[in-house]
Image (tube, rainbow, N blue to C red; front, side, top):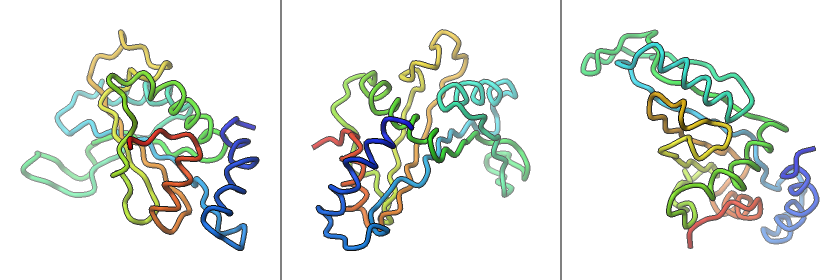
Amino acid sequence: MPDMKKKYNDEVRAALQQKLGLKNVMQIPKLVKIVISTGIGSDAERDAFTEAQKHIAAMTGQQPVICKARKNVSNFKLRVGMPVGVMVTLRGPRMYEFLDRFVHNALPRVRDFRGISAKGFDGAGNYNIGLTDVSVFTEVDADKLKYPLGVNIAMVTSADSDEGARELLKMMEIPFAE
């Protein structure tokens, strides 16, 4: 069992239930999934997609999929079916292992890091954060990056409000800026 999952089961659940005043254990917020995605653009070379797939697979331990355009956009010379990005959805043990590496290894390596913004909540209990450089992950070799690659990390929780999700993520050791 991953360390973060053990921490959630042993410490966070009981503390959250008490802090939020929940009577039913099924109401306790939990992490449902983490989605890591990057947009590469329609004018990028084919090589950029395979490289992005390789680096995101190294970060997450799971093979990402190439996302294709759903609409034609003439201003961007974009047609339906053209590849535009790469994404992976993590659930279960891989999600908790990624969260552990993200919080304890990657975030401290971000330059001038003073905590992540608390403004990334969407009103439904989900949190989004963007990283401009994936080289903060120890699994990605910065020398082998041909193209600059930034990622968006979306943490989807079962919380029905931002306050519940914020408490959950704080207790899961995510460092918010004060």
